[in-house]
Amino acid sequence: MKICCEPTIAFEFTMNLSNLPTWFQPRCLSLVVAVLFAAGGRSFAAAADVPLPLKLPLPSFIGTPDDLPKGEHIEPPKDKPRAVMLAPNGVWNVALNRKVISSDKNPISGNMSQITDGIKEAVEDNIVELHKNVQWVQIDLENDYDICAVVLWHNFREMQFCRCVVVQAADDPDFTVNVRTFFNNDYENIAGLGLGKDKQYFETHEGKLIVTKGAKARYLRFYSKGSNVSALNYYTEIEVWGLRSTAADVSLAPLSLELPMPGFK
Image 1 (cartoon, rainbow, N blue to C red):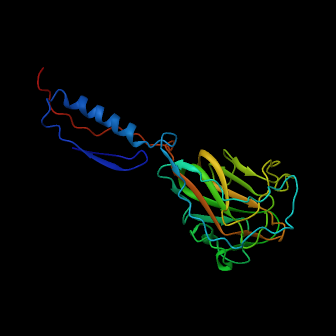
Image 2: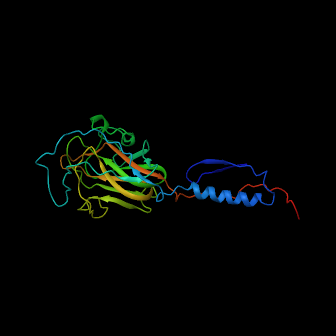
Image 3: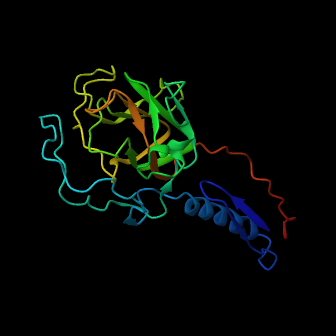
């Protein structure tokens, strides 16, 4: 007898009940099915923590300019590499090659597929250039995932900070159901999404890593409104690190089980 289960990961279990007493076979089968479903649902919280397998592009500049903007809403540039983030074992970039749409229907250069193609070096041909004013790009992960982190590269060819950066998730593509905000540095509420309390940050090859603490998400949207050096909006790459959501809906149906005839009355 073979049993196939897929709470989050497909696997097959084979067992032979013919050597067991007939009265015990249904009980044994029920126990095995319960154990398989309990073990098959991979828990985000229970997974062992390991370093996030993030591969950074090469730096595009060396050193830090002396004349960088400063202010209460600007995070000073760091003088050492970012600390390694620990994440559940098995996380992967679930945004890789996923479909991207944008508020800008006619980008100045590049195409939306480049934002999730895994290529993030600071080369002009790798960067998608959008028009000025508030613009957004949106990723459909195609399934629900438990997200541990988002990493975002706008344009790190030179040291600059982007304005009105907001990262949100929702349960629907129109962003009307269960909208949650993971990051918001729009301290003037220019985008109309609420006053942001996060700091503006300088673009580097490390990207902006945003911790999302295992939030369940399928649709993610990323807003911006130019930078301190350009009114245009740029996107090089977006990565979303997570596991298939254990909270995903599972369709239940009666188990097709043929029982043997009773061995006694």
